[in-house]
Amino acid sequence: MLTGKQKRFLRSKAHHLDPIFQVGKGGVNENMIKQIAEALEARELFKVSVLQNCEEDKTVVAEELAEGTGAEIVQIIGNTIVLYKESVEKKQINLP
Image (tube, rainbow, N blue to C red; front, side, top):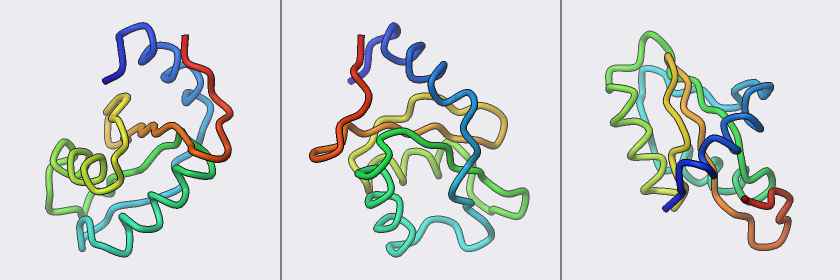
């Protein structure tokens, strides 16, 4: 689990990032979880955008993604979810 200080640190790092995944009408599926898990390994921290036509609630989407990928939910702001998972091979972010 991330501490408040670590979440603040990650939020500041994620602030300038653009969402690289979008969850739409189909919701979360296996393929998306696989792609997001690979992207987390490469980047550690990124945003996922939940589109207006998504039938699931954004908190449900965030929990499904976090569970499926083993990531932490840093923040849900508006329709954007910020996810973090420490990379095994490409560790770039040193948490406070």
